[in-house]
Length: 253
Image 1 (tube, rainbow, N blue to C red):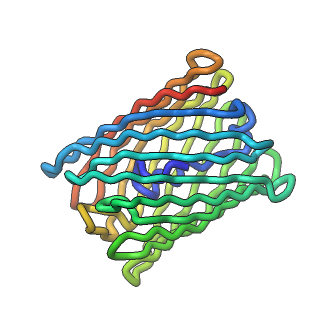
Image 2 (cartoon, rainbow, N blue to C red; image 1 turned 30 degrees about the vertical axis):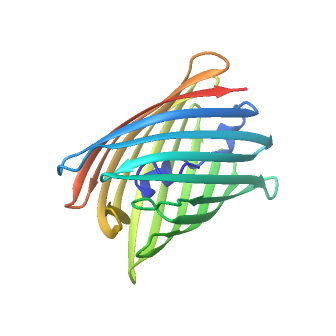
């Protein structure tokens, strides 16, 4: 659900919630995390602290709330994000997400997205989605179309993201592979490439090439506690390269 950690392209691929993976999640989870990113163009380091609470309502149904304190390009922003997912049939799940920033110096002013997840065959999922993200200077429309497959303790997913902004259409692609181990633990690798609308400074959004690679995971320490982590590298056109590291603690109850 979180709408802010990585580039929009990498984030959307990273946080698509699979039907199977949600079955092992306890009724409620709370997570607090902190991320630091280093940019190579002399820009001050990014720092972000986030908190997220999610409550499971039933099979494939949940509500979630996220809060973010962000410092990017020397600007301080805050953001609130919400999500709700519910089964539309025995094989189809729908999710609605929204975020709002009252400061929106760098982060989006607001966004709203709708997505579906369809289990059309054993261990096969189709993902679709649309999202509108509003910055001060531009409104960005993004779609998504993905295919996911589970094989034993592994899964892979490939997704296409068409984007419309500044009267220009761009395309990007992402692939993700996950390995699941233990009761709630996993490690994943995500790679993304293409073009997307992205902030390159305070109140400055452009359509730029992106190359991203991220290692993400969750490692269960006890039945209630888990460690979450992410390491990422993003090349944002000719504007900057960003190396990020995030660590988080998740409590399930």
